[in-house]
Amino acid sequence: MFTISDIMSWLKPSRTIPVTRWRAPSRWRTKPSTFAILIIGLWLFGAGDGMLVAAGLGVSPWTVLAQGMSTKFPMSIGLATFLVSVLVLLLWIPLRERPGLGTICNVIVIALALQVSLLFLPRPQIFALQLVEVLLGIAAIGLGSGLYLTTNLGPGPRDGWMTGIHQRTGWPVPAVRLSIEVVVLGIGWLLGGIVGLGTVLFALLIGPSVGYGLMFVGTFGRDRTKPTADTSNDEFPELDA
Image: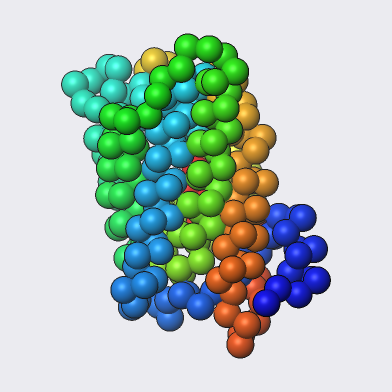
């Protein structure tokens, strides 16, 4: 039974990561149901990335890099995404970051979902349909993030790198993230990745999309016997965009 406060909360995005019934007690210990939610969330994330690629209007910065690599070297965009994730994980070593089960699954599942989804997704030529596919992709990434973040099984490779730099240097998280995204976007564009309207829409809408994804997941999955949110992650440090 939903209360009036639940219904009103649907109108605004979440600013925190809700504590859900399936939240794992640690990064490496989990129940089958929590693991299933992790995989579903990561698959939605990868499929959403695939929608942006299929739409042909431009993709997220890290996918621009993978797309550029796939045009310059004999590899698929899924394999390029996987290799980028592994490389970023290696950059955790000097930062002494600790991975979790979600970190490893992130590397594998998002790359696989991206590659598999491109086998089935439409590639529209009409601008209005391309725009719809971009927006659906961003929404899928938001919902997937809402599921995956609430499992508490560890950050994705890119966000672990970002938070590690923040912790070691003291630089603000937004500044570190912006710097990384700009550099990655520039390298990807130079390699031949597509930067366009989809890239701009992703930058503008991914924050609200994740917020609404967390709100939706929290509304239906919140553990009402515990505090309403994990306030240690107010800036969504685990979002692997």
